[in-house]
Image 1 (tube, helix red, strand yellow):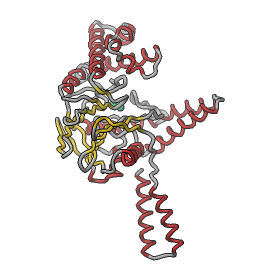
Image 2: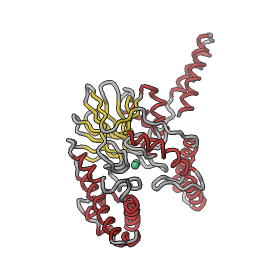
Image 3: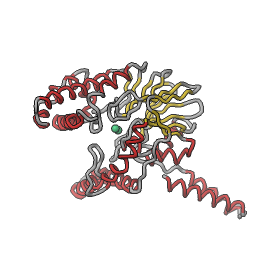
Image 4: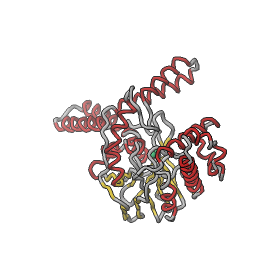
Length: 384
Ligand SMILES: [Zn+2]
Ligand SMILES: [Zn+2]
């Protein structure tokens, strides 16, 4: 995206110089056509499904990709826009910027909030900076900025290195590419071939784009609260305690009764690899005191109401309590995992929560995913 923007700028420069120097009518017609061509946005405009949450608030639901993106929440202010979370790469951010312009508003994005430091929420920051320049504020907690500076680049490098050891939940691109290439040569079905070829193309594009990645860090940070007062509504960016990471924030709009929660409260099985499992439920309890009707999470569908949030809170508390008890009794990780089949976890059985977060998994895949959650809780309990 950065390179593209530069080449476009120099193209305009050349065009301006050319017209100053004069030229034939034919030249001018050719230049106009070329100019129009240069204005065609090259960013993909099918990565997100834009949904209306309530008046002036939108949800960009991330469609599945070989390298996933997070959802975004979009708040339309009187003269500008605030977007929550920035996806896995700058070109995905550029894609959403193009979609906002086509489908929602031509007002510029003036505020970008990184709810936390994870790769799929912050690696696209530069896409916003390229599009909106220095007027753009990138907002996060002090802790999130620190964690981005510490981990973003090193974790990404591991995920691009064929011999690397990527952090849990981060895709190991060369291994995924190799597997996809083998699948491609093994399949005979033209339809499957096309799907796998598209997957390979997406993985290669990500690999190329992120090769020289350097994180674009937040430009505005805070400890507890950052408030934007706008004619349209107020937006409160708030830290309520440690949860999915040490630095998660939510964006709460009291007038529109919407809260955007990143991966702290979401529509898929939570990821606990950087979490504070004992504190997370208490942090959700604190967020729950806010007056909202809609929850826009970092993954999965938007939630109208609070049932899924409460179920997720109870699920994390169930896991933390039982894993802690097992550890105190001297049980190993695998003993604890064996003692916790999916059917024994109350929160997964109540109010349809298990089905909400199943995400197309069969029984054994669901147990494997829960076992990963148990392993992360096991490793993270007692973290300072
Ligand atoms: Zn995350
Ligand atoms: Zn995420």
